[in-house]
Length: 355
Image (tube, rainbow, N blue to C red; front, side):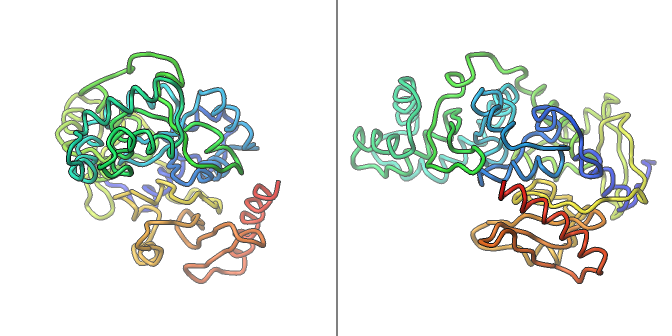
């Protein structure tokens, strides 16, 4: 019978693997790799996600890595923009491509009348072969070729069917600007994906469990946007690569064999984590860190999220930049000591914003 773990053990193990029990003095790329990228449709979010995990974090380090093309921002899991290691992004994007192509056909390709998605994709590839293009220039060039087709839909087809990165200055700390696109191989150099096919699926599962485990099949699929991973994970367990636990609600949880489960009474410091952080967002095992009623109160039709505040390892408040620094919203009543600790963490975020 699988070993049972408590909600407290599940929580502390996740926080430990996410470097939220103790900040680490490690290379930024290594941390990005361990948490399998950071959601980055808000270009500034990844900086906050690293600040709560890396000791002495300096946003300039990420700027340098983006300019040196070691880190990239591109559409990966779930069709969402992530900050990721460029070499990992290559094989993860290829693994995601069938899902992305299917989604774009359903949402955008069906609106094309004369042009096909294949034609739009190849024309966009030829355009990008001459160098990076702004979003506006890409739309205009596609509209010039097919004036009767919806330009925004053609641009979406191109973005989601081609492995393009969003190039700096977008994505740099405190910098803005509309997206400019470049083909991944042109940006970081040509190369083959490190893994493909079934082995790529297994690698993605390994990475997720290393950063987020133990986890359910639903959690891996929700985070990645892929389906049909249950049989893959069952086969990995049969090969003695994965082990199984029973969660506090009777869930079947998978983990990499040999990784430790952290004691539930280990102290968890207060942390201000990033908007859209996948510790909470796109997490089918969200109960580990967030009570459902508190999380539901954050939901908005536009899908935008503030930053999150963890107290004793669980969602207790939110934060977001404001004109006077940082706006804090309590989701439950905080004790005097808790509020003092939260304000110290918020002050650190404020100092980072004002630096």
